[in-house]
Structure formats: structure tokens, C-alpha cells
Image 1 (cartoon, helix red, strand yellow):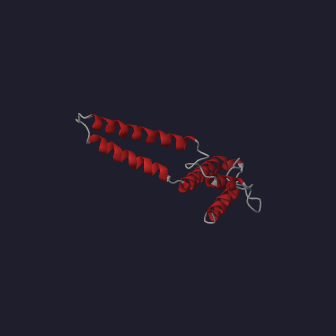
Image 2 (cartoon, helix red, strand yellow):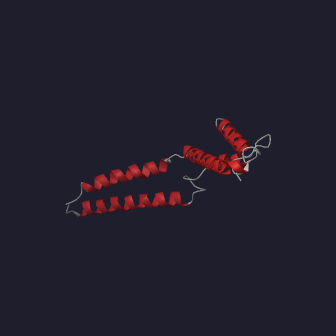
Image 3 (cartoon, rainbow, N blue to C red):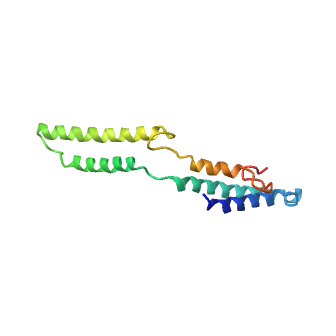
Length: 144
């Protein structure tokens, strides 16, 4: 993502400036330590936003959730029915609802394959941040 490059470069420059010889002198050590901690919090928050920005709810989950809602609401109209056909329909609807919940569990169970999977884009962004920037600037993973 080209939009992330300036932010990554700015963070690298901040780390490089903080870790240079002048700013890490002994008398400034507590201040520099706190600044590095806050910069690390900023970097971690950025990573969380990058990962969250890639996330979407897959269509299969929406289908099952809305289908389950319709089946649950429809199920309530059958309470008090005394015929075998209605009882069979209630059982079938409940079976479909339970099957749908199991389908969600199966779809999410394997996070790196299938229709619902973790894409490598977010991880690639985080890994790119750890590569040394041009000019020898320290990256976010090289604080101390």
C-alpha cells in the first residue's frame, strides 16, 4: 500500500532520531525511554489499524447469520402447534439452524485456508516495517 509508505518512513525517522548518539545520553535516559515507549505504543496501534483495515465479514457468515435469524423468528410462529407436520417443520428448521452454526465454526476453524481465511496482506505490511529503511535508519522493531 503506497499510502502507508510515508507513515512508515516518518516512524523510522523518529526512531532513528531518538536512537542517535546525542539523544540517548545518560542524563536523558528516562526521558528517551518514555518517548520510545510512547512511540512503540503508536507503532503498535498503527499495526492494529492496518490489520483491522483488511478485515471484512465474508458473505458466508452474513448468509448464515441472516438465515439463522429468519429461521429463529419463523420458529416462534410454530409454538403451540399440535400436528405432526408442524412438529416436523419445527424440527427441520431447528436442524437447519444448528447446521448453519456448525458451518460457521467449520468455515472459521482453518484461518489460513478456505473461504474464510486470513490474508497475508496485513502480515506483509508488518514485516515490511521491520526491514531497515534506506540510509540506515532504525526500524520500529529495533528500539534498544
